[in-house]
Image 1 (cartoon, rainbow, N blue to C red):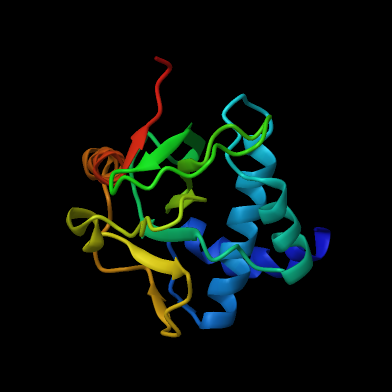
Image 2 (cartoon, rainbow, N blue to C red):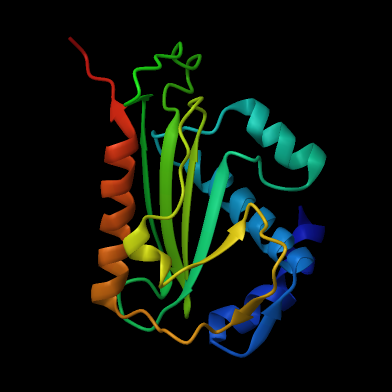
Length: 191
């Protein structure tokens, strides 16, 4: 993992500083892997664990995020998200389409998660779910502000994007992802 940190820092530093950079697909893969690894580690410091062991093994063995992880980045200047603030939410959900998969084994009782964090001028949003038949993608109202880096689109992402998020827009995006998730999945509740 220390090799991943060393490989990521030259990619991550310009993003944090808001400096011009071109993220080729290989750089996007490295950054997405670092983001996923970091979130998987942080996730275990709380109670809302949604990443199953098979996904952690995949990241370790293949060296990239699992295909069910979606990652977007945005350029941000504000007060709320600059110091590494993280909002992690996870739920045990079923697809609104009526597909009811068996719950994941304990202690991995959650199957869908969303993460938002910021470092300097970099704003990151991730979504992952082990539900089958649920396609999680950026909500339409957030597409203008974000750049998808995982799964790869095989296009170069130019940084910084022309639009810079402020705190109001960052909160809007975090709520847009929450509304989008609510439309796609339904949390299971005790009877």
